[in-house]
Image (cartoon, rainbow over all chains, first blue to last red; front, top):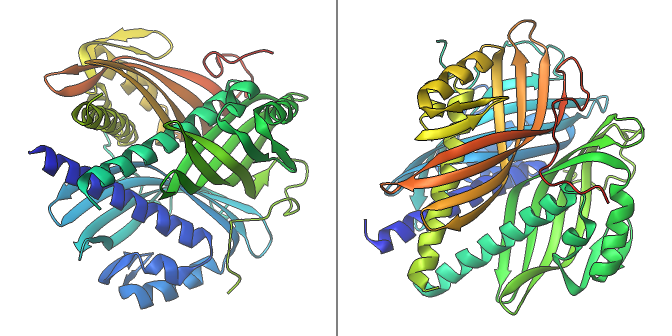
Length: 155
Length: 155
Length: 155
């Protein structure tokens, strides 16, 4: 790779990381439309069911966010693999929530599994799926609905 | 923007991110003077009241830190907007604490809302404010004193 | 520093950050061999005792990971100091665990204290030590075994 190509990769990774931060920030701002705008027009959001396009995704997110009076989606461990104008990524989220119903806390540890594409110089989610690794306070705290870390080995 | 300008932006963002990490590290090292040194001479720290300049900020931080036997300020979701020699930023903090008094845990989820400026090639906080989004273990666990995510929509 | 040198520093920091993310990801994938491959051939992992080389480290990690049915090592506050082909780093980890035995949660807040070296263009851990700052759910929740934040001041 030339230095120019390496620099372009760095810019792309930074832009993708910033996209992920903006998505989380819009979710925590209780703005499903703003969060859904991080998806491509034909982007798919998998939120316990697949939703296609910003409009359907915003509606789905809206229903989810109605459950909470506060949320905080703390992003970390962002790992991006670039492939020209597309990319894949795996990142971590720890999310704190207050339930709207009774103000009880709910904690969620998950992975964001992403496919991304670059359109006219800007990155968007082509597909975003969240995989739960653990939770506390959902009433169950059991492994149901928690697929775990993607590709976790059994040994 | 030229490649040189884009590279300078990347350097500036990195320097600001490192400033934020250093601030957190100095707080968790129980070093209020070191943390306050991250502020400009006329910088303002808003810690439930405004304090101006590193000396006043260090004194305020000292009083706050005396409450805890251990702290961990985990930084994430750093979003920086550059504007030449100044910048604004929004970032997330999840802070774990042990109370000095009784060793009980206290958890805090917040946002750092920052104004920054570059002085002789180095970035400093011109203004730093923390906005609470949630907490557990402060004796109340209620929304009082928690302004919530900046600009959170009501819908 | 020339722009080329500054860019190389940025690439090195990014590569080290990605190494840390990969290590965490392999741990959470229950892959002690993959995690240990992040160490140099003569690298030392300090996990309540020193272990030298990927093979011994993998064996040690294997024993540790057997205790948990799920883990999530959330990395943040990565601070890297470069010195040519070597580096040191301090970073934060918040780790969520489910105990294999009884599915109870265990929380751990720590610091990764690292020495790194670059071998044939790739970074590896030359030494990695974890320093506990706090925990909940290990049966004790007391300060024993928790050295605290490195260099924490007493004032």
